[in-house]
Image (cartoon, rainbow, N blue to C red; front, side, top):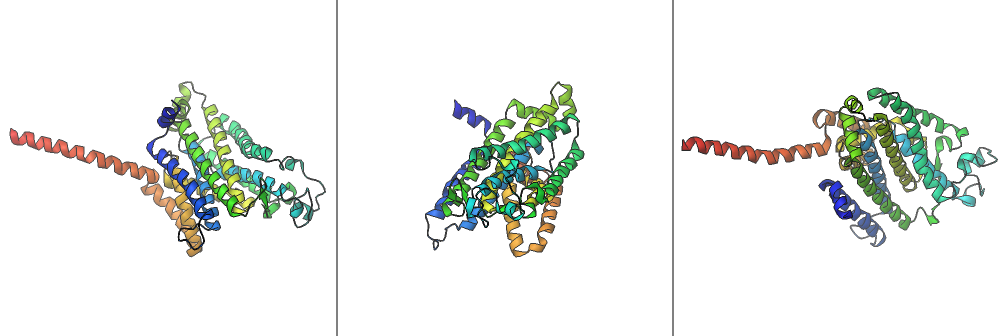
Length: 383
């Protein structure tokens, strides 16, 4: 019964995406840990970390697609939720350094000792405990999204105005986290991590585990997303996206639906940020940059808005292109990204998956039209 229920909510492309992601979660760690460096298919540690970063971006894209693709909320602030989840994980990792820091203080992180802090701020209490840190990964972005959404949606702020204030929220957090007196490392952020759950964060085994965890989290985000959008809740979200005033007229509390999906999406983005930080080794205020949130919108647009799997694919493809461009032609990447968004908007408004669906429909409809024409010709000849 459970398998039948699972199959009913997962379409073919989602099942394929889940199967491929599960396979990658197994194969890549094996290629890192069980093959010699001379082996042609050996996965170097830096490649595994890079792929893990891509998976985290894919989770962020799925989270954004939930609110934009299915509810019509164009958020230009999801990078803030991603960064807040990353800071929560970074604070846990900083507390694990202990006396191995430059100043060997058993309680205060190095940057606090450097800035002459005498005691650990209240905001850092409890972050030496992993379950508490993981709770904050979900709670901090979720509470911010809930508070922001409660004010915005009940005031019926929509469209471009909502997009602008989400971007303003992100920029405000960027400026706040740049301040040294905030107690989050200022412009340098948090770095020099040593351990996670007692394991060396730089070891190959830990990198492999983090990569597989990111893949599992991506699978979970797709499954949860598909469950939501295929439920009655998801049908109401689509109705709100397509005709919000009509959904409100039918008696639905539109602001409650928006608030629920916005908060859940923010928590998913926080998980993505938490997995991102130990794999890249740093979190700083630049992650709050509005440009990062805009880039996430481009991922979703390229892959296909309202598809979930397409959003994840867009994140993988665009970030792969970014890695290649910044290595070969770094000065042209922003031009390439802007051009990509313009081309997608003009010629692929439904993204890559929309193009695939269009080609598939044409392929199935053309033979039918041909059969009708042949039948008509035969009837004319017989008469």
